[in-house]
Image (cartoon, rainbow, N blue to C red; front, side, top):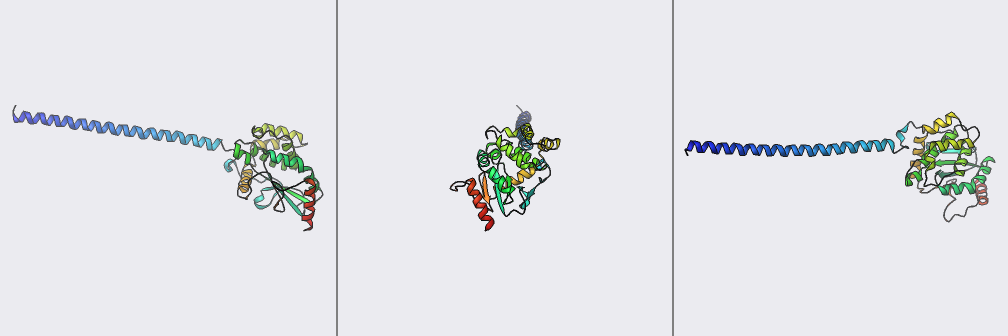
Length: 258
């Protein structure tokens, strides 16, 4: 074989080897691009799911609408719904959750006495609505019921509807108050409350942002359970505190004198 032929074959082999190397490199780049696109596709889908969850799973987010204050609200940031005369000498503060069984037990024992003290001008009650059970067990019953209660304040029916919600409270695990139709149905138990404005207020979650703001304030208040009951800022109900309706009357009288 001549040197010329030998050199030509060697050059051909080198070109083929070089071509194969280019092909391997191109294939490697193709696999890399496909892998990157696959990961990006997963991230895009996951991001879409996250957006859907954020948009649909948090009914109480502050982005649901403008911050609107219910009627008869007062206190810091107007987060308390007031029952009673503003000039009453003593203030009872109740942090409560309409899904909370302990709150229902408190209401059954003390609501009659509280109403008597409020109506006589000795006491004003301020109710601060929270969503502790929703936060712990999930669901929207605490939020929806709190919004509905705030809606009832618009027609001066907060006390009556508040008591109806506790008298008909479902088991906390069922989240029945997550059903807005249930909350509207209960309005029929309060004369004059079953109106289109009330139904619209419940349906559109008019006060959801206010409820969320109230709940956030509770979370930073230093209190961690419901009901939390304070008389002029001092805790009077709970473990180690032997409160009775009669003792509540006595404490209110003593606070008024002091």
